[in-house]
Image (cartoon, rainbow, N blue to C red; front, side, top):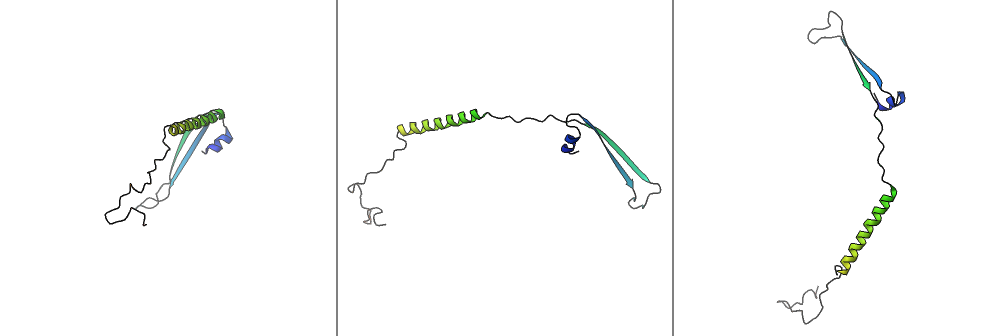
Amino acid sequence: MVAKTMEKLAWNVPLNVSTLAVANVTLLPFIGPPKDAIVKTHEIFYKAEPEPQQVPDVVPLWVVILAACAGALIFLLLVWLLYKCGFFNRNRPTDHSQERQPLRNGYHGDEHL
């Protein structure tokens, strides 16, 4: 049974549903048609009970906004602390010509590239 059909019939009360299967034997393997008609039936009864629909949990909007602001504040505090500690300062090498020594083949580093 499809759930939508059950909702249309009775959405709040249990339904008694039965299924009937009928088998009619018309030909037996290696023997041919049976002398007497063979008809077998089987019926299944079950009770379909509707389950209550679950309501999804909703997070209030103020909680989302407060969490986003707190996260941004913590991030800015971390960046400010790293800045104060000198994490973003770049240590550039000094460009003094007397510190450069010529290489064995006479070139001065990558000046000729």
